[in-house]
Length: 165
Image (cartoon, rainbow, N blue to C red; front, side, top):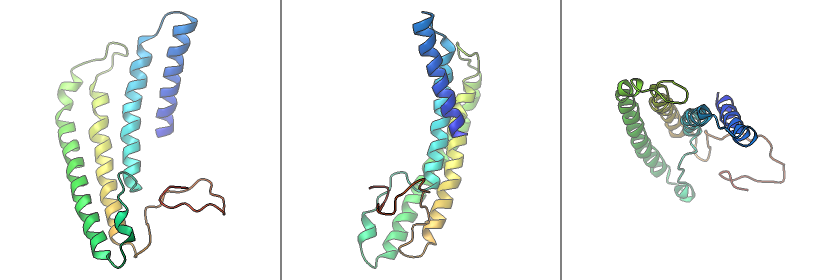
């Protein structure tokens, strides 16, 4: 879905550039389509980043030996804060939908509610994935990162530590 939304953004922006410079008249709907697609793409990408545990990682405590209790405490406290913020986004996001659906965009003629829906939907997925990530981190054996992101290509002579080469 993310790739499709990124494709929509690229095509809409490309059409805007082509129509502006080739035909000397720009299409108003392309800006809105690109913006709305980007909002949805961002919210979905945030959820995927949360699922992999790669948003705002503070790994300074990993190098403190024999402090597993400290790691679990920090992971639990941060998970509680993240879950609280995401729950607030879901709650207030759904609460803000009725007024949003009463307004329409001028270029596409669609309701702003469809764009505003991205926030509570993306936050709900992020909320579920944050709980899943905490569960995996909390129950992982010491020294094992259960949220490792798949690497598409890594030569044997390159060692990746926390995403850095």
